[in-house]
Length: 112
Length: 123
Image (cartoon, rainbow over all chains, first blue to last red; front, side, top):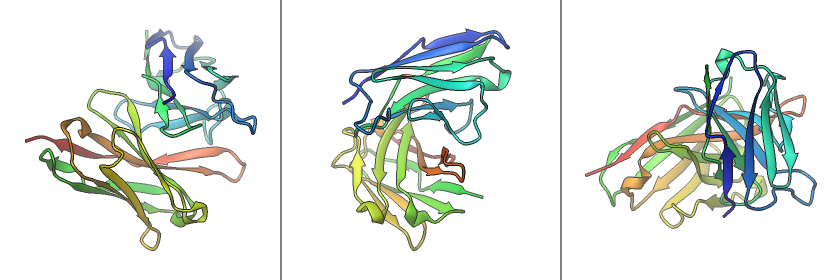
């Protein structure tokens, strides 16, 4: 199975400041079609997860442009350019390259 | 409006069975693969199973933790996906979600999730 490792696991951020979360996979998520099969999700408190980024760097439908994804192969980053209060929650990366699809441990973003 | 509504959760004894349903509305259910996820209390997300649309063979994939015990199916005429859970264990206790991915008119991917149904396995 592909192991996904996120860091940090806890991320206190001042509103208006940037934030960055790292996600590393135990094997490359780059498919022969040149897409990286890596999604980012945000689970706000008490809510179902919501898709933020797919294919490593494509912003999902309706997601604010302050969220961006980058990286390729086994090393990925989710960046929030300016954190807002509504961004609190747990962020997960998930690989969909091969079954079983696997998640990172989650990164809890909180407002300072 | 797209909706996914899970049902069928509850309290069940270890070793017993339960069938979850995911009722979909607002889109052509048969055109989409459907996923099941779960989240144990206070824990992270875990992918459980995926069933392809009939156009892609209707085949399924499973997490190792449920392979051989859980079975996913779909009834496109009713727009429902099912998760049959047998030989339940305490570690299957979780909030179970169904989800589908789609592409919108601009070509961007999105995902719909239900609100989940809680399964508690305990004697």
